[in-house]
Image (cartoon, rainbow, N blue to C red):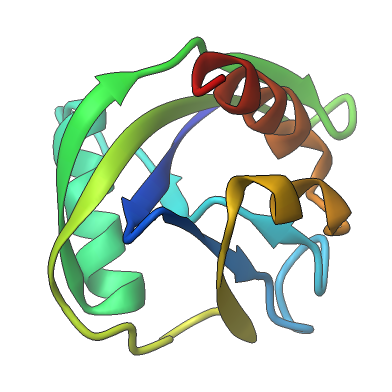
Length: 129
């Protein structure tokens, strides 16, 4: 099982979503940005590092949501660990993704999401009601 973090980054009543590049697994699917936890790294430290590496911005973690374990195949099972975050500073500069959007909470459901992110999205939408 691969442990992966993801950030639901809030800023000005919008939420950041990123689109996977054509070269990545699940090409052009939308997701909450994040990445794999390295050995001896906490989930929180991983998320802050990954967001800085992938998007060139700093975030502050506000709350952890429930994790979701998703089986993409018999050999690829991920445990996605989500955090609600706020943007601290920086301007989005993509290093891996094809695109990004700042969307209102109501617009989030209209995207073609990576399957592991769907339960995370649903919990987030229920949490913020």
